[in-house]
Image (cartoon, rainbow, N blue to C red; front, side, top):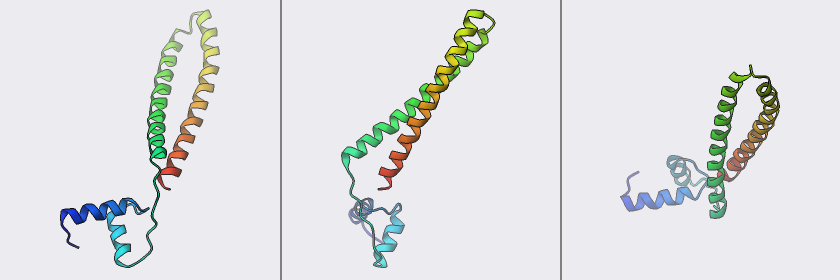
Length: 117
């Protein structure tokens, strides 16, 4: 199928309003007069998803940095006072990492639900 730049931009704009992931799938369905599902995008929800995606990445980076710092601190476990602190901190670390994973998982679920809607 041949078209000029303006026509291609218009077809791409129309395809982006559908659930079709690729331009070729969209064109195939339209050409064969098959139904094409049109999506309604909520700009506020899209911005929210972008922010949550960024927060998920930051949360992962923070968790990784925290984990590395605690591993380095564990090399000092020969000092008795520090050993007690490290053991107590390990409980806090596990709770933090568990909650962090729950948050990341939920953000991922929400992102998937809204980005495929």
